[in-house]
Length: 136
Image 1 (tube, rainbow, N blue to C red):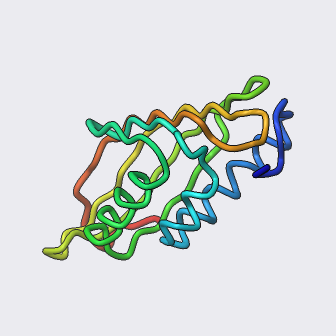
Image 2: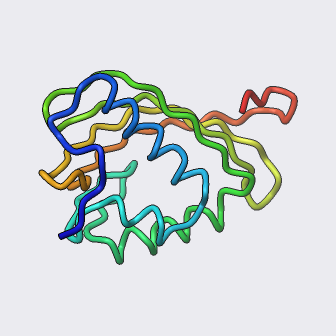
């Protein structure tokens, strides 16, 4: 059986570990690696897209990182309960035309008993920035 430690119920320390692992995985820009942190039937809402299951997660992430060049992400702990974690994040990227963007948002995560994320709901806002305004 697949497990992704740390497992719920989360403490503040293990929730922060889970967040750092997610940040590291997303910054790898490896869709297959990232998808392994989610259940086979994981449900996502990302902006206005609804994504279901690992195959759709991989396809979404490939498309995302093909369009978001020089992607760099930072996640921060917001709150947690037994099997849920809330994070605040920001990331920066360049689009295909060379415009820099900073995206801000919040994510709500729900995990199964094996530490795999079964639900991910992301609310994201984008802000065009100049290259000299980059923080990450």
